[in-house]
Length: 118
Length: 109
Image (cartoon, rainbow over all chains, first blue to last red; front, top):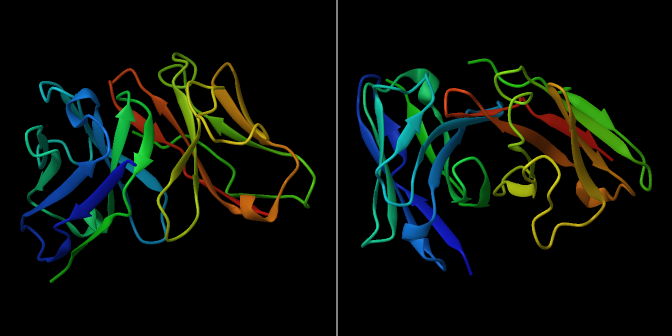
């Protein structure tokens, strides 16, 4: 059974940093692209970033480019999102999601909440 | 990057059919056959319902179908059931090698 468990969310001040993690199990982690998608309170889904199975290729939404870094450790079956220079508009529930490709997500975690506020 | 355009809400009675539209541009929906649809019940993880415009993942009811014409994709749900009540989001690959979601549509049954 595919399981994706996000962690690392919390309250952070504007300008601060936070690293999210997503522990994956139930599939061959290194074979699939992984994505981060967020949902601000009362808003819709917003795609954030994707990384290839090997970790060599990644893409970002314009809203986070230069501030967020996606990475993965295939030996630990874990996906990461390093977030810096955080802003109020980054407040959201952050979901990690599994491929099968870089443009489709067939399994999603339950999300971890990030709140950016002073 | 602007979100793909979806109606804010649609409604239907049990047993009826509804269609949700998703309008993009020639740089996303119109250019690629990489449109997906997700069902999202509040408080739960989103669920993939349709991928690559019209393909259903294993386990998804054949009451759900997808299509595309030009810059607009559509999700049709036939034989509406109470459990279909949820938010629905489309997404598309773009020429920027990114993915864009629609604003979401609240389906009321």
